[in-house]
Image (cartoon, rainbow, N blue to C red; front, side, top):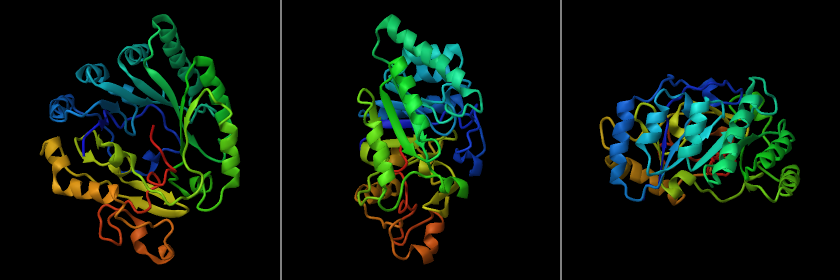
Length: 338
């Protein structure tokens, strides 16, 4: 595996409290990454000549990190990417304009605006749009990330009109990762035929000036993990190294109505081992080859699912792989990261 992108969770704190976020069922202690730890990561990534991108992401809002400016300066020279809710200071919006290659804004709360998001998000969009007009700079490339449900599907068309207004042409759609029974009833994807979902996509495709990354609407045979395939890794605020977003925290999820406990799985901590040692170690390499080569079961369409206790959590699967990715909604292209 060649490391191409590293996800760094600067903070797991957030300035919003979105209803659909799985923070509501996790057991993670909120906090920020120590600046010295971040500096250590900066030194350690020099061991990876193929590394091109540094992505400030995770479950928190990166711009609330108290050392956000220093973090950006530390990783200058790499392509900087970020996901954000758009609620930020004018200073941070300026940093975003001048230093980042690509930014995705979460617009899930835009249509309801229960937290006063809309006006603040528009203010950030205007700052970036004005920067593009004044400098003629192609960066930062701006995209919108949207979590699609039955109840919010129509609101997406207003968001796409808003994107056109500001000259933003990238849209990343993901389905909902349910964290409770209510959410489980609101999913727009299906285990079987989904004519309603397909008809919806046809309407979306009429926006030909927007590049849209879409999830699948119904279960398919193919399973691919973007993190594994593309050489991505994730480091949380404490220095724990994870394979992906899904296994970075412990929380509840519902897979086609069945409750599951996702258990955080760390392959090591960079305070105790180097990042290179962790990635090249036996545990991570074994996991990488298992997932890359699809050498794990498929729980979602297994005939024994209803009577199997292994699907209750991610400890291991019936091939004795650990952790289990056997019913991961990411590898099925239902849930997506920008």
